Length: 108
Image (cartoon, rainbow, N blue to C red; front, side, top):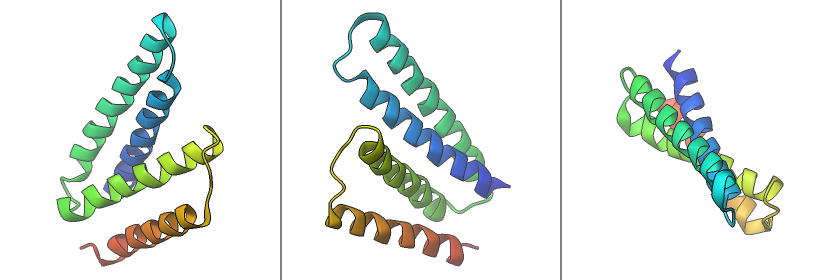
């Protein structure tokens, strides 16, 4: 169950980076709404991460959490913010995913 919580925490990390990206160049109420979303996702992500590390070793949980956030943020950048999807960018994201899966496989 805590692995599901950890994955949700990682998705919340993607959520707060998405909100941060959407706030770029905005002003006034729109900026405050996106920053409010950023804060909400950030707090939820931390709460879920704290819950997950009750049974998952921190040395496994934290890299998995940041890895999900990193991969998700790159994918959001490519698909939503139209950032370039170069060969090397995709290659290193693939190696990051393989590392996350490897950590999950060797976790106690």
